[in-house]
Length: 228
Image (tube, rainbow, N blue to C red; front, side, top):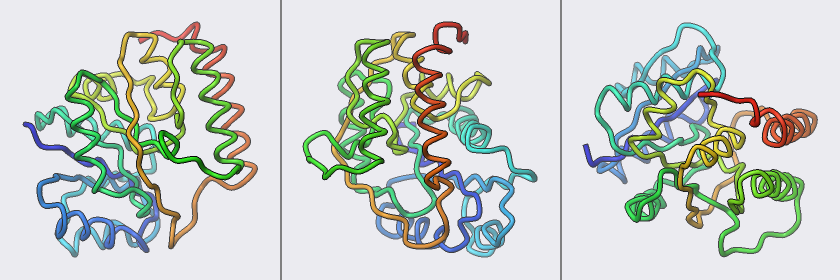
């Protein structure tokens, strides 16, 4: 299938999911989507069921890695050639997906929706962390990625298979680094990522700092021992 599937992991996104999915359905009918409800404790599943959304209802919380893998297995089994990691909180904009797909068709395996390709952002902890992780990827792979922490990523059919059937893969920068080592070709396309308008992000300051340390340790050390 030449259509793009948006894989939308959702955990307690009851305040956002209706706005996100209705925007896709009403304004971008050329895009397919699947919401993966990751054992939410709020009304996310009820909203998806009531609104007739295409969704997978996980009975327990698997975390982002297991939730995303579920979506990628769906993409693989349904025969999609393109799948996008797309947030359920309204931060990602579907209007950039066509440009990402066009870039992928030039011969890339992963295309990242980047905040920092052509636009210069004022200094922030998020930008600092992204640059630090990007430097670690460059030191270990030689690839220059300006926004490795962006959660908006387009994957080719080959990469869909990698994520669907390998338990070691989470949709994080260290996995991107690992896939580069395995020969994956990566590109970036400039996008704008909006701020969350409702609900709570899991990335609190302490969590964000812990995440950055974990990613750096994984990229600089653990990737040397990682196997498919």
